[in-house]
Length: 490
Image 1: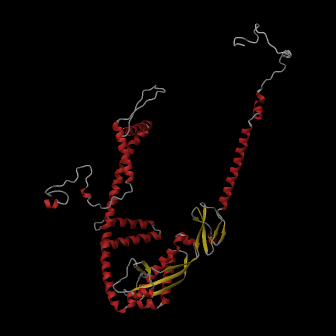
Image 2: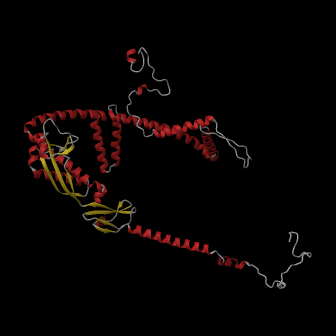
Image 3: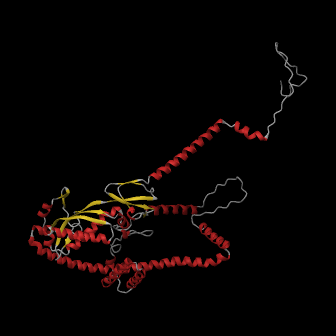
């Protein structure tokens, strides 16, 4: 059958095989289906793809699991506030960094404590009892350097090898200055307890406890030794221990540290090793001490001159102490008055040294800030009136100025294309000058980044003979010129 022939063509004769029964005539339609809007949604839901339903169920299950996980994390976060205070420790509760509680409730004891979790709340713990050992603060170093390296020698060996030609090193050997100018050595061991953790934590941190006690004991040892003769210091053990402990406890009480020194032992009290070995060198040591005192006073005078001038130093220190006293009293008006006097004293002509240099730099920096910020402030003041009159015009003008400054850069190239190009593609190439400027700028930025942390302050041999961007060194046959011969030419 060709494409031009149709089944209803009268010229076509139907062909039937043998045995085929004649086809029954078709009946006319007996039913008509019509889709109504009322049942569209229900039919669509019933005909939904099972894969989509499975995906929706999986998403719903994942959301429930996520909710449970968030709830679990919230519960874990709340229960993380339970902390255990270790044995032999105490502490305080802090809420946003501030100690909370009233009376005895401000300090917690050892055991499990419930509180807000970190960082909302925190239980800061402090050891209740500790021991500090000061073996090197007022005692010579027993370490010696040998062929095999540093070795620790015994106290007996150190005294046996001591000599008057090996003086005490101020930066390496500890000592105490006794009454009369003699020197003494000792080792101190002390036990302390934190009785008031609130007062302690209001002044210091937990890791500073040992350091605070050591500083208080060191201060007390210096003051106590200044009132003891060498013989009393070496022989009267009870007096030395009790006075150092009382003075140290007084310092801690003045600081309101909440620390109590329960026991203190000052052991290995002795004169310098050379004196212990030979009493005959005591007089020579005193002479050396006098010389050292004289030198120290000379050095002190020089230091005062270098700091602010020896003539003004005492007065300045007195004013500073007065200022700190007024601050401690809480009298702000009196403190401001003393501070004004300190400033006026620094403005006088006899101020020299580092203080004068610092003041000069500060004034120069203030002038620089005033000139920079002053220019900016004046410009803002000049633009304020225009902004009030026509803010849109001023903002537009400033934007155009900034746009112009950006486009005037050496590395910026503006390429204009005619409108209406549609999908036409343009291949453009930057100018040679702009490309060179971009390459030079990129190279300079990389060079600056590489040299940012480079230390260029070191000395380099022959650096004076290096010339940048100009003719370099040139040798003369007759040796009449060149670097290092300027004096000979004159």
